[in-house]
Amino acid sequence: MDLFTPIFPPEKRHKHFLYITEPGFCEPEIEVIKSWADGFIDRNGQLVEEFQTKFNSAFWEIYLFACFKELGCSVDTSHETPDFLVSSQYGDFIAEAAITSHPEGFRPEWEKDYDLLEKTSTKDILRLSAIRLEFSINKKFKKYRNLYSKLPHVKNKPFVICIAPFEQPFFFLQDSLAIVRVLYGYEEVISRKDSNGEFTIIGESFNYRVQKKPGFNINVGLFTNAKLKQVSAVIFNNRATFCKRMFEKSAIE
Image (cartoon, rainbow, N blue to C red):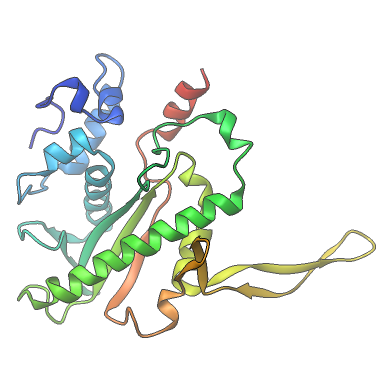
């Protein structure tokens, strides 16, 4: 599988792919990604296209494949769907890759304007992150319920959703706060400051709704009820990006 030989004109290539394939710039990184993809079967013939034109979804899928191999798992990518049939020392499970992307009309993650960071609150970052995570997780669950669960190689195996966020320029600042809110409704620690300036934790705050727009909320706390009972686990990583520091340095310079 040749990921890096361009098969599309420059105007159709993703910004990250253009960056990686700049001559003489990222040869070591290219070799690492090639090693990750070693043994990966492109069962629907679309991975190379996605890697060159959409990038993040394909990068995340290759990253997961490499992680499972590193953990000593045997990974079967020969089935068209779902993404991975994983065999481990603890048993077999199904893993499906998912990402979050920016909503229509929002700034994409690769347009990092650092002047905007000072004007963007953590609360706003987390709200958008939670909205997009909830959407992507539910979308994959519906696919499992309506399609995947009926496939012979999926039946009676745990189903795991593996998700990475790319919904806004500073998505990596969310840490685990948004996914914990989406899965468990957990919002924040409540603390009290005494006269000596010492903080004491007095409780925790939970909120099972996130405002998508005025007058319309989405429900979160997906693992606190039976709605997603067929999802065994969610794997989340907000740092699985290509050379984030390089992109940031480029943007600053």
